[in-house]
Image 1 (tube, rainbow, N blue to C red):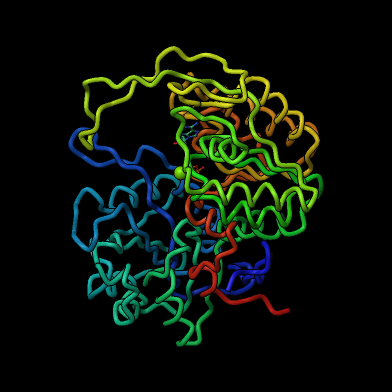
Image 2: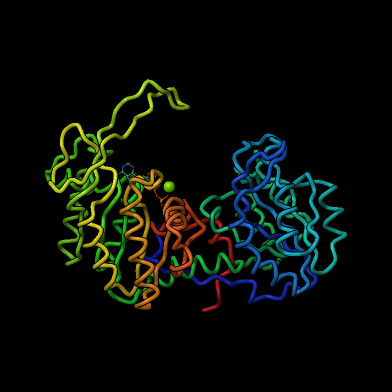
Length: 428
Ligand code: ADP
Ligand code: MG
């Protein structure tokens, strides 16, 4: 069953319980991008590690004995040394300015002995839980071993909460059976607050900006937002499926002809509910030219030649739309300027190529200005959207950027997240 709109049963957090002296199993999201430097793997982006510091500082101050668990990459049950969490333990120790013990196992005697030797406020990071295939299988016996000597469970890994794995769901069940508390960390709490409560009763106008690659990825979100939003601004490749639904031509643009009916239904629903749904009126088009170079998958690399402004509602047969145009950007900025609540998911164009980042950056600027000048609340979800916003240099000028990626999308779709469901509700 789907959750009731965006509302989610309020969850207890580490602020609601006293974990002093307890062994606390803390699931964090340390799935950080790694790169090889001088023969060693190092993290080249600390965002996710830093995001856990408020929770860890709180637990340290309370005198908890902290056992951290996380996954890194997709080792698929194998001990792939390039996906070890050891470098993350070192980085965390620098950031939190305390020693962080590391054990190169996730379960077993070594983990138990180190956990038993922890003093109040000490930290231990165990090895990548996905070195065991039982993690993703949510194996009950593995969850029991993973829980080890812990008497409390904290989940601060919103980005992994859409998966029912041993460390996100199984361990919570074990701890609950032991009568121990299962609560949200402070990052998890913020995610649930902004993606849940804030959007459940938004200050109006509530303007939603949707873009990205595919209608099929976002249709469930569109459908739910049509219950809440005042205005929907459509961009990205998704817009071309809407254009097709309007009987317009989209040339070689990325489009999903089999999703035209869904787009039509969304437009009709918007109309029936009096919701403004805007589709780009102009765009940047390019001539895609097949080169003789091959990509990793062995397919010819396309080169986007001759970028230019197209003001015709149709896109010529041989051309591809890669960004919203200046007229659309300014119309969208005008709508964003009126907003009191803004939700943005999905870039307006192929922002990875700076020639086609113009529309996305214009929208980013409008969102930042509405936040800073008009007191609008702006919430950004989706991995690529956050990347685009950071690239625009305006990441600090919005209210909240979700760390959730795929989890934030599933949450916005109204799916219950197993990692959240496993936590204790706040008493009514
Ligand atoms: P998010 O991760 O924020 O949810 P998506 O994954 O749905 O966003 O979409 C991001 C991708 O959409 C980007 O890689 C971007 O290049 C692509 N995209 C945006 N506009 C277009 C377009 N006009 N044509 C092709 N791809 C596009
Ligand atoms: Mg994405």
